[in-house]
Image (cartoon, rainbow, N blue to C red; front, side):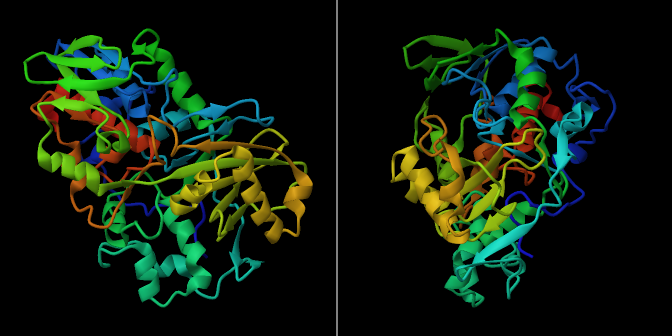
Length: 453
């Protein structure tokens, strides 16, 4: 059976950044013994500026505050959380507009989720496939097994590999679902490098959903500790690191001074050159940014009067992955999530209006369920991360030819500039919230106690 959105997404491998630097479990606080290498005598007393109040930036600030380090977080928007966000007035339960599933429990964030008892397992959802204009519970060929990522496979795309293995057009959108779960269109995602990085995955092979929302976990236990430390609506346009003191300049021309800068913006912002660096970043680093993929991504929530649909549907031409967003929630409303990635998200984006986007999905569901979608639709909500000006995509993925680009991209520059965020995760946890947290943690260690790494 082919896996669907968030269903056992990774293979559990017994190694990780945390284990390799000999961290152990202990204290019941969020600053548990997983972080015991950040010691009171770390010896840094300068000023740190963190660019971006996404999860990586928030956690870096959380740790710096715990050590009494002077820091400020600069956030381009008016809210904290980045790609972790929620909406409260659409259904009788909260919906996660961005990150939604916790992938495994063997992580700092997993510890917190277990401690707060906020998660449910997602392992028992039922799956169906839209195959040759029919909904079926199984496929003649196990597509997931054939196109499972592996470092032993050639550095070609999922689409090209599927074609080489004889999978015809009838499996095209099943392959798109598998690639979309990994953040990309099947024509862009490397089957070799996805497998290479997944070999480092260590957080666990089960996926979990939150009874309330993923946003609440971050907001209540991390963001809430940072009141007064986040400067909102501050768009950074230039970082001058020629001198011992770094100068950060925002869109309004305001200068801020720092000894260290942690840059946590999405990889798309670095690729597009939104921030000017003086002097220029090393050419190999700029080249590495460009080798990391981050494609179009969209979530569309469809609220219906009755539940007529299956819990997970794979293989749609308009949207390759639908999932029942009501699973595990305490409310009674019926909400189906269309999880749209890659070229499918690009195609829907060209329609413009949210109403047209929703109608395209409703029309596809009508074809699957004999008009039941149109008969039962009550409301819709579109979240297009591709058009979000300070995100411009879903999450990073492994492009054909990525090689060691993440390693080069994540390297500090002159012990002044540090790079964090999910795209900079080197232990296979990119694309995940807990992976973003790990990078914030790692860069704080680099600053406070660099000899620990």
